[in-house]
Image (cartoon, rainbow, N blue to C red; front, side, top):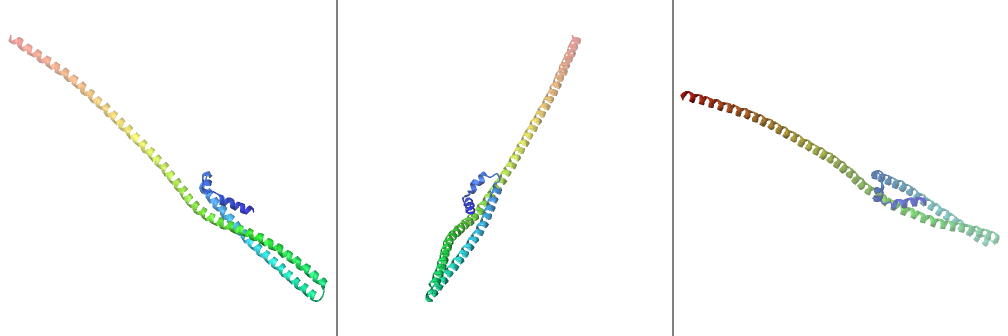
Length: 222
């Protein structure tokens, strides 16, 4: 049966392999559960039909057995009345119903085997569905946690990058401040050097003036 083949394919399905190949694992798992639920419903329907058919076949078999028994009684009555022709006809009818009952017996056996196969498939599919639901819930939770962790890592990386950029900016600012301070110090040193030079010149002039005055006083006293 195509139905049992589809069920067998679902039972063979490896969830981990399907997840690895799926572009959207969560969507794939939900679809897998949905497919199993649909197949489970179809199997339940087929099991009910198979059981109903088996009951109908058993009913038909019983009817033919009852008819065969009834025609045997009629044949016995005809023999008792010395009506051999009627007895032969009755026995012929009895044989026909016995043959029909035998045919229904074979159909009942085949139907019972099919119903058993469907029941077995139903039990396995119910078990597989329960396992798949639990497995999918766990895998979906893991998948969602992985996405959250991934987003958190991305945010952390962006924050780290922003922090590194801010650190670089602070370092650049510090270097600029240091350069400015050095430049200012150089300017101050230049100013001090200029003042020192003028002070030295003024000191030399004063010394020369004092020397001249000293010479003048000596010349006057000589």
